[in-house]
Amino acid sequence: MKKIIVIATFALVATASISLRAAHKPTEETDGPKVQLAILLDTSGSMDGLIEQAKAKLWKIVNELALSKKNGETIELSVALYEYGKDDVPEEMGYVRRLAPLTTDLDLISEKLFELQTNGGSEYCGEVIKRATDDLDWSDDPEDLKLIFIAGNEEFTQGEIDYKTSCKDAIEEGIIVNTIFCGDFNEGVETMWKDGADLADGEYMNIDHNQAVADPPTPYDDELVELNEELNDTYLPYGSVGRMKKEAQEEQDANAAGVGAGTMAERAAAKSTSQYRNSGWDLVDAAEDEALDVAEIEEEELPEEMRDMTDDEKRAYVEEMSKKRGDVQDRIAEVNKKRREYIAEQRKQDAEEKSLDEAMIEAVRKQATRNDFTFDQ
Image 1 (cartoon, rainbow, N blue to C red):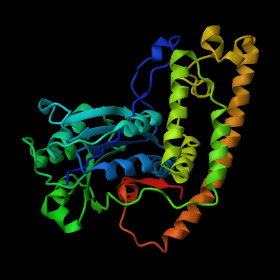
Image 2 (image 1 turned 45 degrees about the vertical axis):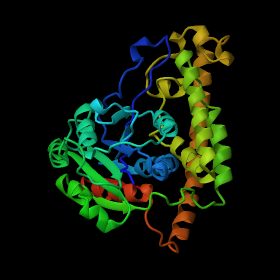
Image 3 (image 1 turned 90 degrees about the horizontal axis):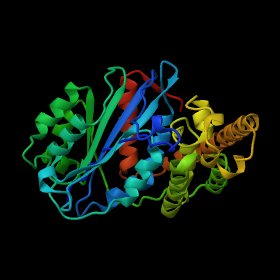
Image 4 (image 1 turned 60 degrees about the horizontal axis):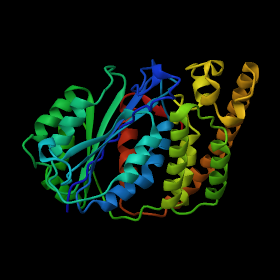
């Protein structure tokens, strides 16, 4: 019975070799409202169920946050991911390892989640909260929403770093700490998980981390999977990094599909939102973000079908793919709306204990609303 802590982080990926100015740079600062989410996962021996929920529900959480706005502006979401409590992480590091910094690269977060494996170890909640607070590139704007989610099922008090100090330090920086206990509600209270949340203006929740992760099938899943294939055809990777990231996109599609049709449907829906941006390797997003002019790219760095085009033909082709992508995204949004309504109706008859995504979404909505964020649905 080990703890589980999840911190999600998003880090922008390097661009192609021709675009050295963008290579390996962190998430860019924008003027719009931000939601920054750190997920800390305990990867000690008994946490397999929690990790499976995180893999299955990442895209559902992203879709929920994609509905949020502040002052009428769509938010920019970044996620960071940590693991802790595993023996193969050195003791001098507090058994804590950052897997991804705050990044908008959602495929990177998915990749890291699917690489996770559990092992025995010591779970230091105070240590991992401190690391997430101190090491991540949190926004300085008090209007932005900064959240840590930590989940687990053993005492919150383990380790040399006092959880009380870590939680107080976090909220002093405007970072809300939410705690998720895997097990009985009262046991989580007794083992100080609720106290940790109370100290940092967060929510305390309990879940059944061994609950089945698959969403019930819906009549809309197959259509969303087909639309995802159409969406993928609009990506135009450039440079060596582009080719690598396009392969990663396809790999994370396969990972989601391997969990179940519902998870793949959620991923397809997430890829249709403004939160799934890939200007570091995709010509369509790069052109829309004005990150580069396709005419500046060396021929060998372009997708093969574009190499013999004139500059005007290249720009026209990128514009054509942009329009096609927008049309597919609109269709995905329409179908996903019906899917969400269908699932909501089914859930009215379901009184099961909360899963990881439901606990996180409930807390995020409450805290976002408290900070003047709104949701479209």
